[in-house]
Image (cartoon, rainbow, N blue to C red):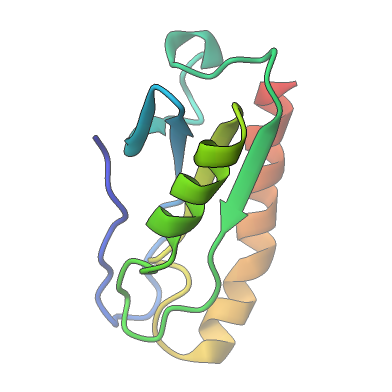
Length: 117
């Protein structure tokens, strides 16, 4: 299992975006999908719909407490891939810094989605 990162409040750290895959066969255990790896080397099922969860600003650098419940609720009602985007490092600290990081986050997510297609 891979869990969300915990960030410190130091500004200027890299985004360290992680993509965690949850499926009905592993609803509580996120599988880390590396942007550099082939998507075929993980449990991603391209025949299923995919839901992507992206948290927002994290003032204290902690894991969003609601992610686990949302993943569970989605997988309880649907057989889908659920991908949680962990960008705690880039969303932590001063709010203006987190806002500045959103463009880079969007590019990372866009590249990741392109791999899924």
